[in-house]
Image (cartoon, rainbow, N blue to C red; front, side, top):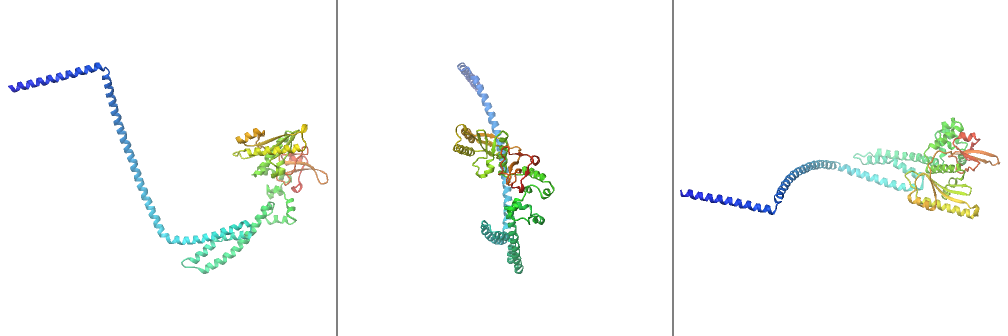
Length: 448
């Protein structure tokens, strides 16, 4: 009985102590809430942030795990591919080693032959240095040695194979010497032929067949031949030349010349003519100084005069991707100053003083520096494209007996550049028919 009383007292004391402790804790919390009214709200926010942070950490762990697995898979694939490549390279290497071992003896033989060929080439290189002497005999010998190199290789092979064939090698040596002689003779004739055609291109019209060659039998010398050669033959074939009338073949040759691919010099000459004719349309008297003087034109392509004005003109027709630089402006300005001094030395002062202006005509743009120079030096710059223009020079002159002559010159005639059309003494025609209708004929012997 006593023990039950004791247990009951213990339970009562424990329960009272617990209730009292809870009451004190509540009282303390209530006191703190009075002191910090926002503590509960902040606590809730912290708990929410803590929960969100935990979720982010879990998400990051999951993502990191996936990335790690992906990286591991890629790495494994690369390792597998690398192993496969190593295996392939190993097999290829084994194959090459096997081939090398099998062909080692053949390689030695090939190297020996290559040494022979190298020595032969050294000899040819030495002979090649003598080409500067332009000795046709030596050139022919070098060419024949080169063409007969296969003979040497055949001889070498016959003499050095396992069962040498010395008799056959001697036969090929003899054949090589005879062939060498024939080749040298042929090449010497060929070089002479090419050399003559290079110096006298007019001959190319007569070398197609023996019948054409017979036409040269009555030619006394090369000068006589050149005087009688018609340059229209460079633009029309023999059949056309023989079947067309004189005016028709002259016009056809002119048409083909205009459409043909021209040298830079021919393009420059056409541009100078075009610019000069444009000046003449405006009443200027034009001297085609560049065409007449060529490399001695002092940078003056055209000299145009009208009244007391003189224009010193330089024409540049270049490819679109190029640019005119300041040196060209300076050259034109310099030659203009020289022309001005020449006029002053003639006494052209006061009322008779000439007003000289440098003019630069081109189809392309100037560099920024060149344009600045032109502005400072007062060089007039004109942008002008090349258009179709009359090319036939119709000149009125007098022959050796003082008789008036009316002669036209085509662009490929020998006297074309030196023929000057003075104002009122001729004109430029577009077509042969236009020139003929005005009473002009083409120059005799195509010289004048």
